[in-house]
Image 1 (cartoon, rainbow, N blue to C red):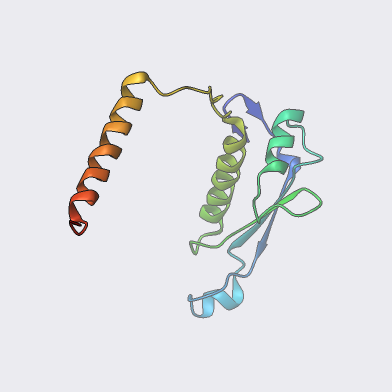
Image 2 (image 1 turned 60 degrees about the vertical axis):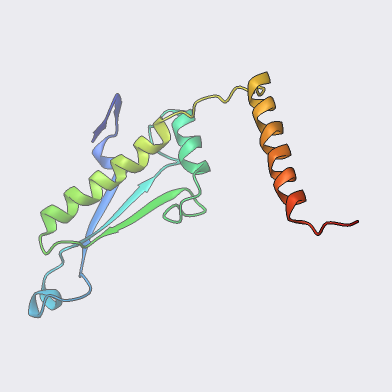
Amino acid sequence: MRIKHLNIPDHEIVMTAIRSQGAGGQNVNKVATAIHLKFDIAASSLPVTVRQRLLALNDQRVTKEGVFILKSQQTRSQLKNKELALSRLRSFIAQALVSRKVRRKTRPTKASKLRRLASKSKRAALKKDRQKVSE
């Protein structure tokens, strides 16, 4: 499987066919169309930084041992479910490849400070006008 510039060998991805749940009539009881995908992140050939990012993601599909487990049963076709499972694995790994933009601290401009203070004084004057007049 290929993701951008990364290449994952097929032997690292374990897919097993299992019986699907839900509607489907007799077909559900006799054909294993759902796919159970397992990908061991910790033992994979991915770069160390990508592995660390994947394990750091707070995803419920990743076990404590670092194994990504996915079940695909959207369609009645085993082949389509395999393709869907692989595409979901690709998107999961692509999520870790995106690096966050570094935030630089900024200070408010003088004009924005003046606008804020002007709006505060305008609001204060409006509230002052609502008060009872004391003689």
